[in-house]
Length: 321
Picture: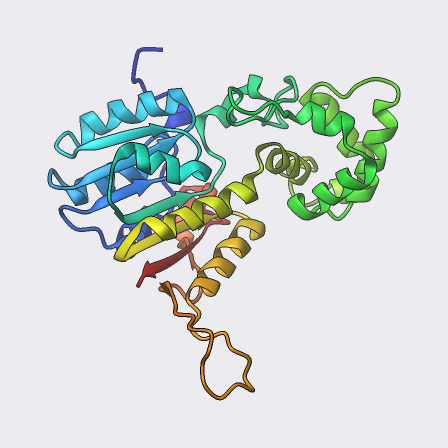
């Protein structure tokens, strides 16, 4: 591949782009941080808004994404200063310290799994391609892979992961089938895992609701990459770094992520938390955020038709007080 060339995996249409731009309210001179840079679909437009007096920070743990994004930003927003940071947004404190910025006016988290690495068959994220069971988003820093989870976790833990992270109603049956199969031989490939999942789901249920392995693959991927814990750490750091009147915009794609974002924004927007029977506040608790989106924004029917990835997307936005 030519250096900086956008492969098809990097050409995903950015989800709810106009809603992101409208709710972040960036101005010329703003500092904005795209915590999920990917192919820079959102970033090129945000860079144009902040202009040559602003700064765009982009975070990604994938070298291919960083290279392609840098080339695209140079072509499409050449006047805006940029700092691209290799790492996971769960380490946002460390990354922003390294960037030497005093504060940030806008953060974007696009939690979708459209990162180019997910589309490379050999990485083991896809149930449509037979490949080794890996699913690590950052292999260089993560030793736990999907094969180890599937072949070593006990049945109760597997069932819990499938039920909680995948919202899989046949979690117990699939976990039982995993343990039964691996007693004969290890489950080593995505194809093997798909077969096990199908065997654990009743035939009638497999005919509805999309690919029967979708929820289980999601669950194992979340466990391997500790995605929910990373999200909590990233949001907490973003709140600390956001300048007064700055905004945090999060696009989530499943209920677990959305619930974390909703609850954190609600918690940080609370004032007094004293019990109601205490007539005078003694806690001294003051809100840190103001929730901008009381209900999450969703994509228009026109966008969903044009870009099916937007179907499950929800945007929540909060402003730093």
